[in-house]
Image 1 (tube, one colour):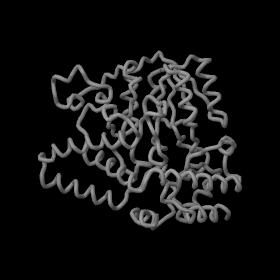
Image 2: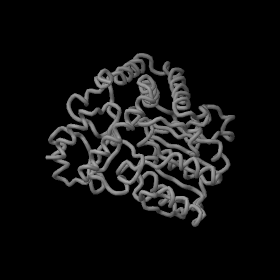
Image 3: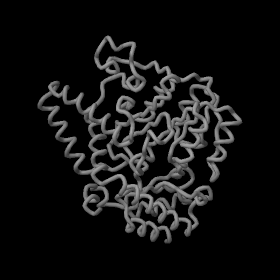
Image 4: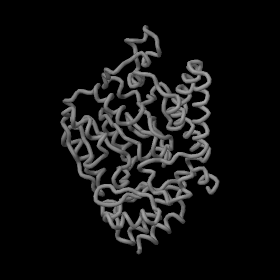
Amino acid sequence: MDKIKREFPVLRKCTYLNTAVYGPIYDSLIDWRQEHDLDALLHGSEMWDQTLKTLSDTREKIGQFFNSDQDRVSLVYNYSLGMNLLLEGIDANKNVLLLSNDYPSVNWPFESRKFNTTILDITSDLEERIEEVIKANHIDIFAFSIVQWLDGFLIDLEFVKRLKKANPNLLLIADGTQFCGAMSFDFKASGIDVLGVSGYKWLLSGYGNGFMLFTDNPEDKLEVVSTGFNAANGNFKNKDTLALAKKLEPGHLSSLNFGSLKFSLDFLNTIGMDRITEHNQTMANRVKNELIELGLLQDHVIDRKSHSTIFNIKADQKMFQLLMDNDILCSQRGDGVRLSFNFYNGIDDLQHLIKVLKT
């Protein structure tokens, strides 16, 4: 792990507890990006075939990494863009369940299109209440973040599987931006119909890359109207036969951005997602116990069996500034301070944090 940490220059100057804002860039990725741009400089349009291969390889790698069919992978520049394109193909008369204070790019696209929305507050018994609301309000779509951006609340993924099994016609749309890369994830086994992810956080890929994954279930429910020459693979004959995944790729895509995503997926595979998952789950439990002892967590987080690696502590501006003055990089979110741990954070980082908090 020390060798891996040396890949991240930012870790040498601070205790980095801010992956929920931005996953730090690392040395080997920068080397790859510089080589890519040098090739573009020297070869110009001759790189086109290599660009197409990079994009195809990225789709294939995403499919392997998250267990999804390659032809059901859309490369999008971020979750927000993919979500807005997707919703253009859904009847606004549908009944939609959303979670209170979920990430704005999950909730706002539904609200701006005047869907019939029900907003559910997040409590420790969330899953039980979701089932009740879906039945009572005849919900057609449930859109949610797997991990909540404000406080790291983790929805029970086993519950999501059961929910889909009990409600096969319910469309489940999930944002995995604060989850994918921090924990192992099997899309086909998840019960989720559509998963969207931006790659600049836990996938450590920089800005401008992300993806949407689809099961075969939404094909008949979504009439997405976005299109373009790239969606047809530059073939006029494909205009009227575009698959759903391709409709979210109307224009040319950056081999630098999406090649960076593929490079980082390979990087995470080299470390091993099993190792990353085990490390992060262990760290999450240790951090949670320490913060509970200090009385800094909210009840709906304390009462949960499982939690992510993101925490929001009760802290004011003075405490936030104290953390920053002690080289702990974190963020103010909601009414507190958000801390996020990843595989490059160890016990030494936690001990430093607790020492500062106790002052």
